[in-house]
Length: 443
Image (cartoon, rainbow, N blue to C red; front, side):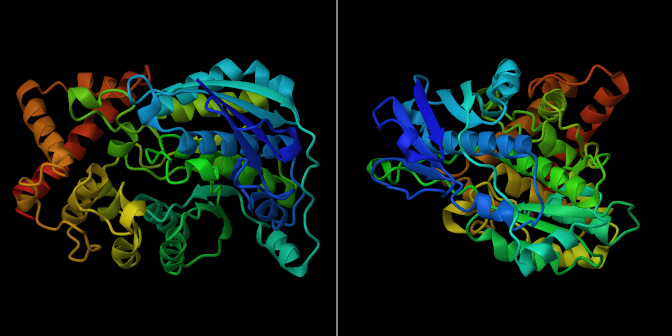
């Protein structure tokens, strides 16, 4: 087990050792990269730039999210006994350590489900002063831009989030959202191009946690990113708190999580992908569990996925502004390998589903891919795994027609039989979209 110690003040951190990893939070003190890792260097400045005083519990939440993202990045899966499930104990400073220690078992259980690891937390009293809003003209303008907004919408620069934003802002929705974005390197320009297609006013909160590992481990970080939705949703909660304080309205609670129903469930394509090897970032079990935990802590928010029962192709075909979404398609990113080469591979599961959805919607223009001809991919042993897994799933499900069992393999599903039927139908239609794309010879 690796113990990760987090603190804003490096004087309160232990020395690095094989089983002890110190991480400096935020940039309130000088950072020595040879002695400790670093995370969220600019995040407090981003919070102060909002021009709004924020509650201490919101700062606690993004502190925890930063710690989770940093540990998820710094601990290599190959170090685990089974080369996958890591054991991580995080020591995190917060303002209200008692309430977070009281929900620690639930938090650990949720993250265990999300990432496939074994998480443990010890929450301690922070000594960090709470960040105060800036008094600059820019900060005042930012605070003013939050006035009148009544919701938060996750905006990643992906195709699903583009549909979500367009449906709200180019349609007749009563929602007036703050778009919350995580600014990975290379993502910002993509997100800005898609935002230019939106016709109504909206607020913006773009942030980065940017973990930087200690020099002695440089180049040795994990890329599976199974816990990424935890920090994304946590920042969305901070967005809700910002809107409440800016508008003096404690009833603001809606967080839109735009994700097609097939990927939301993400049923394992083969037996060896059962469990956390298939991502669970927006699975209903995780979203419902996280919402319940947040409400127990006192945030009272509501996660809403308007596309839970739609396939990606249906989202595109039914988008309220067809001109805008057609322009957004080549600007958006769906690939799970994007951050390696900044080009979509064309053959990972998200790329295959994306390409199938564009075909289903009848759009003629898509993004460029590293691999366009899937037919030739079958000769490439190192990169054909996802395509073979999809083909195997299509054959197996045709033989068994047991979509209900397949649905359960991704995690617990709601008890309501109507919802179960809808989820089952969604994954069936989602797989059929990919099959239709492959049969059509779009290679």
